[in-house]
Length: 152
Image (cartoon, rainbow, N blue to C red):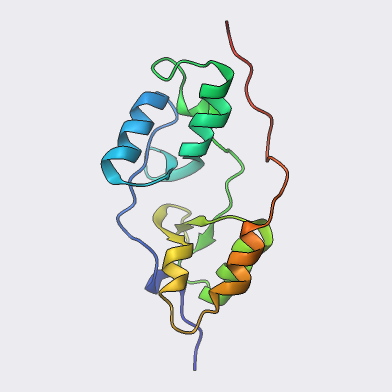
């Protein structure tokens, strides 16, 4: 039996934000689409980062940054990990486990965003044992970068 590609279970309708969008716009988009993370893309769906509700809270609000005037680019994670749509689900799950992330943008061979795969997507895959992935992802780790400094 051939491996199942991640494209078979990823979410295809992915909402994105631009680096120049405000945190207020990003938070409103998260609320509107009921998601906790949005890929950050430039024109042509070229992935340049990812922003989460936690980024907005910990990297911005906790530092006193204003949501209406702070841009997504100021607090997003730039070194975003991703996978290709034809990679096997097992490989993607292992990578998510190793780097302790709950969601992974999915790119095509031209490196344009085509979807996102989450722990929930993996849990729905009958042949994927989610328990080890979830255990590894849930263990504490160091922050991936320092919080930005307030401009006040």
